[in-house]
Length: 120
Image 1 (cartoon, rainbow, N blue to C red):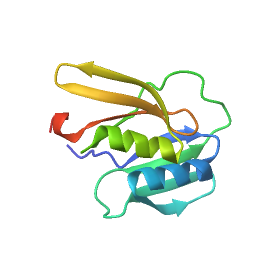
Image 2: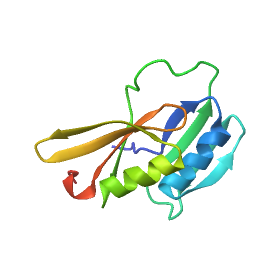
Image 3: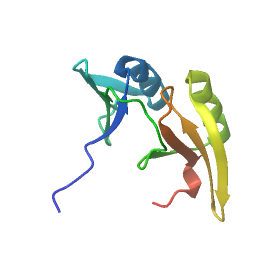
């Protein structure tokens, strides 16, 4: 198969505002700033990029697709992300997995779980 995930795009009102949040949150760098669309990528160039695309319509409902991020220390990482401007929406547990749902500064949902709990 010739497909791979090159970029995950987040619609937003203000790409510059979310650039500050996501570059710090993920330790990414800006690889292209087209004003209406900003591309962020891992500093080591491994993995998918993040696109921040300006749209006119406001976010209304829960995201149907979101990022699941993993961390060695989920509570510490959640605290750090909240310090950067994220908000906690909830915490959930099923046998073998606990995750925290957060929103970025524009209300886009994403989750953080323990790295050791994520399937590989």
